[in-house]
Length: 500
Image (cartoon, rainbow, N blue to C red; front, top):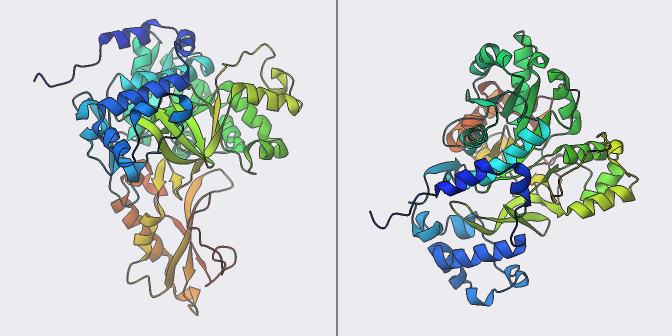
């Protein structure tokens, strides 16, 4: 057993519990750039897969002595790195012995990717939860019931969230964590039995599922405002109108403080979090579309969060995001395929001032409000043609298998457009527009058969879809389009299988 790695030092847990949030965010002996460079050299020396990854690309680690040189390193991604090397080789020491838990994410073919990590790895992520619970919900002063509504099991959301919340309770927050997962009946039972004993209740889950919980709870007689309900989201971009809609359900009087979204991935953990300041900016931008377009380059609003560059270091690459960070499988310039960009805190303040926002009150915050001096990352969603639905990444390949069944191909060309759409009441559903073969009469086509076939294959191929999406939301809405329909299948242009 002498070759086993030592467990994490208890000192790292003591440091987390004994150090205030302000101090944790302020501690920085070296710059984030220097920290990323140091992580690179450690990985080049101690991670066998990364050492081989560099060798095959003729990179000499000794030549990487500055941040400018670091920026020339090859990007790693799932194809070129995660699937190219054995899992233990991607860990420090070439062994899984330093990790004690694992999360799973679905791949485009249904082949899962495993992400091992240790309890100590979660402490850095727990700081993101602490930011939300302390800065937004004042949970250090209020007895709080945290109800984890993410799916439980090997998937990253539920147990990761639970573990981080437990760390906050260990730190002294008056916090009780309940773990019903995505079982609405169990969520309601917990709320009815326990919420009355606390000053506030926090529901943590994927945005559309949280809305389902709120709506179904109201139908069952739960008055969410009675429990001073707060909301934590992850996994999907949503509009400020949608946030306001849910705010009405919970009786929110402070939209910038009553909810927060986390930006996270299975591979990197929670990378950033909404803050009252970022939410206030986003709500202002929602009412100033020209300013939003000049800032983000698009007419749609991305998720806007702040992040700690000493914890997860971001770079921008051709309009997509690259991240580096220590983890069970350390990431060095890892291309996470999310479309987005970066803004420094100073650049954001300068932008707001240039557009006439001189003080906090103009953003709907108290004039004396002091935001944390942290940079911003904005995220439109996946750049690799996936669609996020109830937190599950749904790939065009999953849909293709459902459509390419012999009984369906007599009607269909196989081309489709996958998107998520909202009802007027803000409920999300999965919509698939499919192209008919020439001269096919739509009345002869069975839309229920198409929808059922797609659902069967999604459940078979995509474990995230099977475990994240409520049963009543799993059947997609299918619409039939004539051959070469100009709205979805125009002739002469490259076909896109998804819409953002």
